[in-house]
Length: 442
Image 1 (spheres, rainbow, N blue to C red):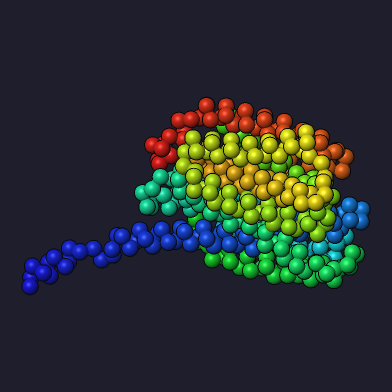
Image 2: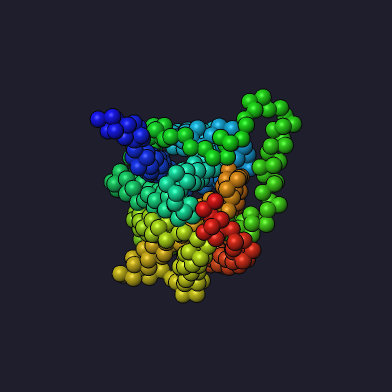
């Protein structure tokens, strides 16, 4: 009996395998919650953004509001890393959701006194929610890889694939809701539009509440001491470091063209593709269906690309493949595309939407995974640079689109794509060792 008691005392009080399973479940749960929360918030906002240029036409209020929004987004992205470091990624994302809620609410009473302030505030909120998201997701992936003794490059790819795959379906859900609620609305009527915005506010509220259930998972933010009594000089120095210091990193300089192109191609879809290709071929009612096709292709491609991501070679091939789909569509627009009737007139815009969605899914998953692998010690700064250049290029498109033709825009896009790919390949050659499995696992 004494031997049995002694052997029982040597047994661990907690099964280590159950602890690992609990950690794995916790990490996966946070990714699920984060993905679903963003899906709800952006299902509403994405559809609102698509409708801005058509529901707020007086004085081009909708288009100008979006331009102001992305200028504000660009400016505040310069300070976003500092905010996220001090607030933490979870709190930053929670604060960020308020801007999307207020912007949607402003559309219930659209005028210059409601839309412009809401656009400026949302620019601030968008900067911190996206820097917070990138930091949070990467920290969760690294924590999962460390606790479960897995290769962190693969986990970062998998987690980004799941997030961007689920997030991309917001184009499907939001546009189908808009299509359903506005299908019987007469032109100029506001009843259905107001009902739609109220429904979107409810959906956003659920997403905001869901985000409260995330665990706190900050990487560099938790490792750095936080001084609540920051003086003016200290603040200026901190901002200068977050904005200027990354620009002395050759890796950031080489990837900036890809950041800018990722914003250009999104703005091209929102501002040019729907207005000058989809609407003439399918009518205004067909915009929702084409954007749903875009979102579905984006979601599927994001999930697949995330699963295939593990190292330098996988990122290189995936980005090259996604870029090729965009190049084909842009060349088609430049050389041979024209609006036709019949079945082909319907098929062509939907086929283009799917190809553009594939390219967007590739860029979103791979750029975020790339930053997570390269910038372990300054994730907030890296993701802030991404949003600075994305929002800058988006704002430029919104302000330029009334003054340039579709073919000119396609030429600009194709040139930007070529420049970004050349710069990306140079980046790969310079930092190839960073992506080696041994170093990614450290």
